[in-house]
Image (cartoon, rainbow, N blue to C red; front, side, top):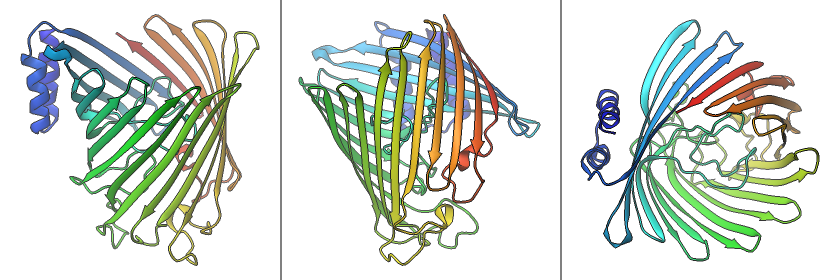
Length: 393
């Protein structure tokens, strides 16, 4: 495993600034005793699209993980994972390399503490995620992939399978999840979550606080102005005759930024069921409502949501079907519809998995008039056809 450690350490020093957390994780990753459980794996992801803008995308993500058992029942673990990309954009090649994950974890029987660049995500919704606060997971991708956040995450567990989270995030000045405002680089965010497991149902409450401002855009005259944003959320999942899920969030900022709505309310409700057809047809339906209001209700909502009145809700439905022909082949269908704007997005995929290779062929179709107020703007430039090849070692 030493060559793997040296290789990853070399990428670290060549591609990234070294801070105190990097030093600490690197120290444990290289000099801890050899009596440990270690694993090295990696994934190549090739994406081909019928797109003039980005027809070719290749990503390699190696991952080194090692864990040591310490006295008193404690465990120490380290994960180091860079990501290397080669992309053709507008007929020119771009090569990038950066960190995907690096974190150090210490854990006991009923707790764990993890620090570094890591993924934080939660909530039962899959298609219209109200609680997508920190990740950029896309359900259309054949494998889950998202950037992490620089953070300290503490989690405690009980014998009854309840768990409690506390986190602090060091902002990098970029948008996360479904945020419309950024946290200034170097500022701290903090929050927590309490999740309770009951018979056939799981309940949770979450909260988060951060300073916010607009991203650095030259047309924004007060782009440096900062406000304080607070989020409170409730979610549940239940497994009865059908699966039920619910995510509700209330977001408020303490001041108006260029008439950016200070208050946002979101609710996602979901149903899932597997029909006894053939090998089982899995169906998932989710409904999302959200509205934006200002302290002064007479103001219309500008910017990306221009044209909506404060009391008018965004109303989006999503439907997903998946069917496995056998252990290696399956198909999936997704549809998103905005009742507010009349737009619809369809996604149809075929997947084949064999040993360490996964292949997905998919088509992405968009219906509706393209408009500035669309909640599906991200789909405008999506390719109609895509091919994904994933090789894991």
